[in-house]
Length: 567
Image 1 (cartoon, rainbow, N blue to C red):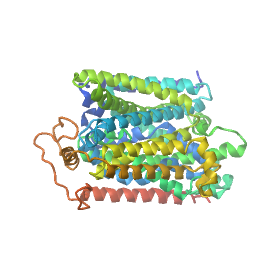
Image 2 (cartoon, rainbow, N blue to C red):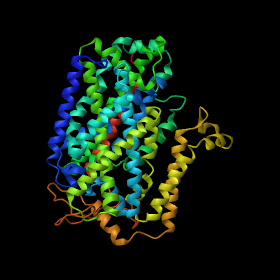
Image 3 (tube, helix red, strand yellow):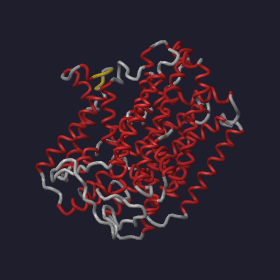
Image 4 (tube, rainbow, N blue to C red):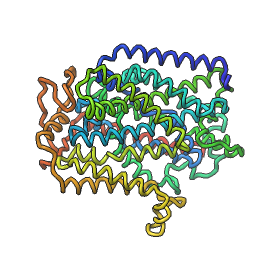
């Protein structure tokens, strides 16, 4: 039925049942907003690793990377490894989120600036995650369509998967997302690696890859065309600036019991994803031999699913069902976290801030559940609007950095003002959309150097450089020319941010407020100037930071070495 056998449907049925039961079980534990939006801050290291891995890894990642490697070769890995050089900084970033003692990243902008900036962030954050959910759904549905030989079309796949994660996510909130992400993270690992052995065997191993593809540029991490060194540098810089403003990272960093859980979870989960990316890019290269070299035309977005549909049934009955269950798991583990984060932003930073301040906790939980549904409906519209997964990923990637300047300036510089935050965001937005217009694309080649263009279009790398430069420059100049934020407000903000969370610390009465009995820490500053708030990192912070850099270097070295296997 629908291209699947009995054992395939059995595997899917077991998966659906377990996930729905988890959602119903966790819904009984939801008593307040902290339970729904941040999971009660009760999770340990292993759960946080798999939550970070699950929230940050979805089927569309495998689809996007394999599609790009199918057309561009090994350099397509940078469509996910663009985050690689940010990963060590995750170890330093995670404690800051936990110390905020907040429910959403919007609370950061509320306490550092004011309610208008928090609402701006809520709007941008919801927009960014809605786009991302839409792209993820498209990628997963593309794989379902390919794996079933077109018998389950993308539209049906998108609607069916959305119904499932909305059901358990609305019921159990972030706690359901974290618990299901443990199960779904294991399935995502299976999804990432189960295709690799049969695909490599089919093409004759690495020697067969090199012999069949022939072009050595297909095995280079830096390609001579679009994905050059400057492209990689700008993508990594954009990723570091924008990663802090992705709304779901509040839960990823702050749902653990202490700061260490957040550090290990955020960095460890993302290192696991970087490892999976290697498998995805190899499947894309195998597809070049299986399809391109044999004259078979396959749409790049359908490559991963088509490889599965061609190879897995030959190995064992039920493997397509396991593959689809793993695919849905990878998609839903991201979408549920994004959905709850969007609901938190709307409920805490728009609805509660501007409309209904003093309602019961049950009222805000109900609003969060309703807004979750609305977000998913909007994401469905985007799923049907976007043309392909790599394009959608690139738009998400650019949009998520729009408020990065306001975040980083506010985190380290007391002089950053409300007007500066607005100006930085609007300047970045104006340059991003201005350089995307067809009018600009036609006008610019006559005035700008040729190296800024590729295939007749303004290079993404130079576009990123333009809107990030505009955002920081305008934000700094505007802040220097406008009124400071009140000293008392800044003192409360930085006192909370510099005070470590102790094991067993009671819940804070509100965001950026230290619990009773907790004294503000006095940090040693890196720059001895009253306007700069850059603390000297602790030994634990430096040790973890350096250890993750070693892991990053090992991954890159391994891929360089692997590229020569069989050559």
